[in-house]
Length: 316
Image (cartoon, rainbow, N blue to C red; front, side):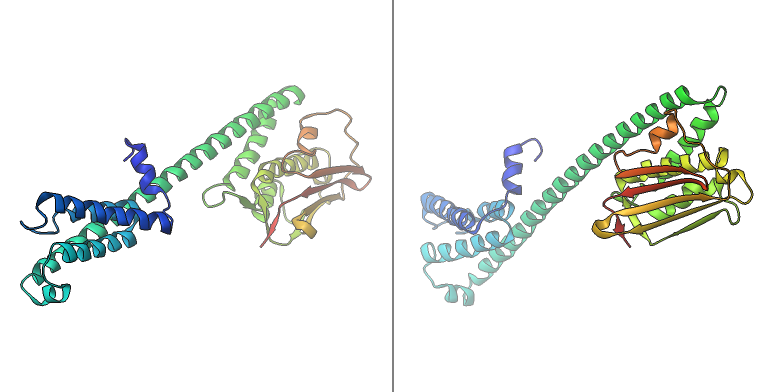
């Protein structure tokens, strides 16, 4: 079928009732005329030319029209080629012949419908394969672009000798976020799982308070948010609340009107965090970008605070 595109398109096409009735009439008329032209039905079985018509009707039009063609062929053969009425045929010696014709038609209709459905399933599988391949290529390109940008910016802004540690940490955060987009999670990722995986290396007993309703993030927000949280955690360990045993981070979120998530990061108990004047890698991650509707960072006396808004969130 793949080598004959026109034939494949005809089988896969949806048939309207008017078109189906027209082709069913043609499928009855042509074998009837052919049988009449041969010997007017006097020799052999009168149904011999009708078998291909039934099979083709079932294959191209579906089992319903195939059945209609089989019934039409039976009536035409009886009206034109048989001297007895259909009722007399059923009771007479030709009843067995008619039964074999009906059985043969049933087999042809079932076979044609099975081929038709198999081709449709193959077409659907091919479409899914193309969609998955396109999605895979899209994800690979995005991932390579993200890794390349992270490597360039980390090398540009890292402390001397600190590139490996900084880049490794960011790649681990990227890996954890990517895992949340695995099998069965094509469009969303679980927010709580993302937060837990991003903050787990930095959590000790009592230094994090995490609260919020269960919800799922759109796919485009999962990686940027994971990297942003990793950056906030890293900054808190280096300069903020997590440098002190009494330091604490409160991470809360709410899902408001229009499925907009508002996530708040609040540090307390640590030293005042000086405002960063130089645009480094962390600044690139803590800014508005695709997936993050807005990012607001404040450097207060109690510690750093950050508010992130994300659209398209689905509450569980």
